[in-house]
Image 1 (cartoon, helix red, strand yellow):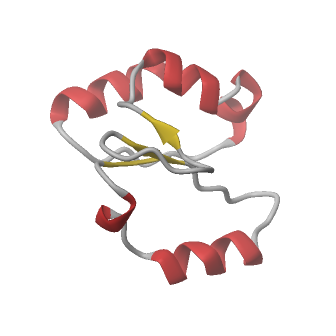
Image 2: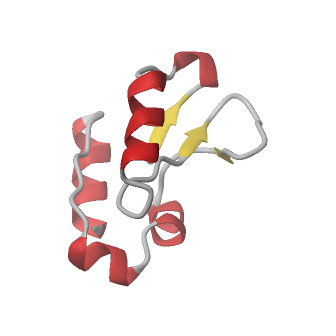
Length: 81
């Protein structure tokens, strides 16, 4: 799950596409944009309901996560995952 204002604010496009092709059952990327509505992306900000929608309980047991952002957002994210 990657949160940005707009899609033009995102980065590592080539690397992410390579990882998605190399690990199709293990790697996925979901974008959430706060200032742009785009097909295939969520819209808004990360909160508990978004995390519950994106990460199923079964995902949480086997997946690895890295949270990057403000301290407040990282605490919330880490607490919910």
